[in-house]
Length: 498
Image (cartoon, rainbow, N blue to C red; front, side, top):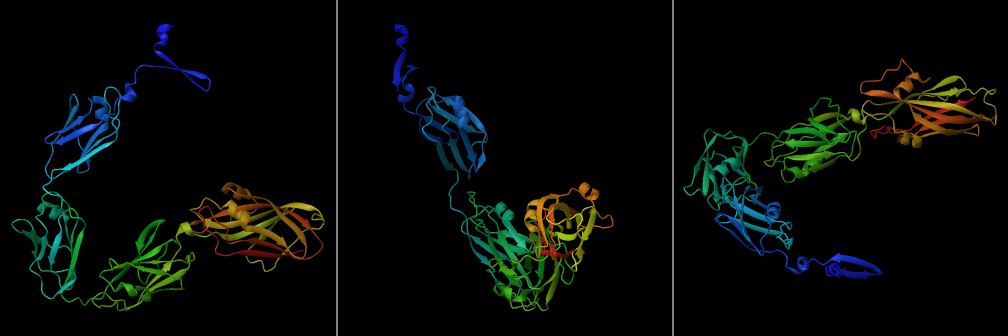
């Protein structure tokens, strides 16, 4: 027992004796593992404060070249770890070394904190710049230029310039470089087209000889010849619910989603600030015009007031919109629009029926204050009778059915002059099979293209009274289908009670 006690210490905490082996204090007395130095010559050599375990280093170590992970071979020499990249260290690159705290020595002491080391093999780190271009930006030329000349802040890599260069419209050309590659002439091989605006773009793919990239894309334009042509406007709709399409002037443009906005695109830079004064809709939709003040060749028309489904609107682009050279759109352009995309078709009340006793009395939208008869022998005063109210709606074929929650909130029945007491007890959306088997089914009724019928069955309690009055069936316009489309207006069906 005495031998065992030499390896055990006793601790009492709140009356409980805890036993724990006293093996060693090294795990918390010895200092944590540290990195003392890093050298980056042909190999990567990392010196630790104690010999690290090979397994932990392989797990903890990673290295990147220009952001891409590197493969390589490890060598271990006491406290030193050597990593040799598969392709060596290449010139003009940026490297990063990462060692996580999973690195540990043989005693289990972990690296004190995550280690990062960055270095490069570039001659310098300054990014190249385009310091001048001829012809200058936004220049109007009466004669074709011999070349477009760009001057750089330092010599650049010719291959990267070829990759970065974009000419719009395209120009067949050759490149003539300065001897030290600090400038280039873009020489057209064929004559340029008069009245055309040319755009020269150099992307960030351009690199200097140390592989430093252009900080941001560069763009410059010039106009060759006198541009007398009027600007051309193209319109298209775009929607989060569907892919957009171009709009055709003078033709009926159908199938547009109600959540669409209209994009205007011009073939030139425009006096875009005045765009709103030349655009309107009939009937008015209170449209909002947002011009692109950066590109100056496009804008967005949005509709805060949701267009009515199936209604034809005319979007007018009035003549007089000018480009930056003063050329004007010479004629009004009209685009008839119909926002009748199937996904947004609103529910429409089709017909209904009130089943009292064994008789189904049809209910339609044009009641003309018709009479509903209640047999006094069956519907005796002060006695409740169960009845079924059926309502049939046309809904979009893209919806599953009506929304039962919205139906519970939207449908109500009332009576005037105390002629009856009516209360709704149950409500159910009928399946297609239940609808076809029900008394309200009308085999002669045909759904239009893109729609289907959906029937609602409502159980009611009816208590008759002597007085005459009106029975009123109300459907609030907030009734919706499973896609969230609501009715366009309230429906009120009023009948004389007899």
